Length: 197
Image (cartoon, rainbow, N blue to C red):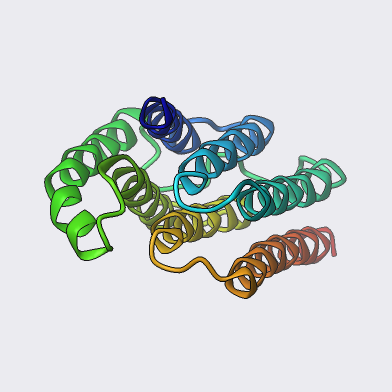
């Protein structure tokens, strides 16, 4: 039963990470990010107890809330929601397809290296890392760069949960997530105030 939930989480991660690449509205991006953290929680639950895994989802949702509240408080005039290159959704879907083809090819060898984490856990983490790096490569928007960094970090946290079960490391990674969201919020406010001046 746990394996079924893990593969459902991988499918959830696939949909949300591709959705983050394709959507233009910041509200949908925040929703996809929150659902992505839910999928990450299910995959981390394969190796960690419920209490430690719930720290990840709570920290992720708090980070998404920080970004959402900051962006909702800013005017929409100074922000170009489509400030990524190239602008075509078809290109982004094609690039996501390439990442989707690479991940199954490398999952068995990475799963073996990472203490036999399992194909679902390894595949989900590699998918998040690949999609996050792709997101970082095609965007210049502060909000989207922050979401891309959080996506890459989520993938790392999933694969790392199979190797290390330390409470201190879990707390440190949660603090990094929150710090990344706070830094992104600060940069969004600073960018909006510099454009207004």
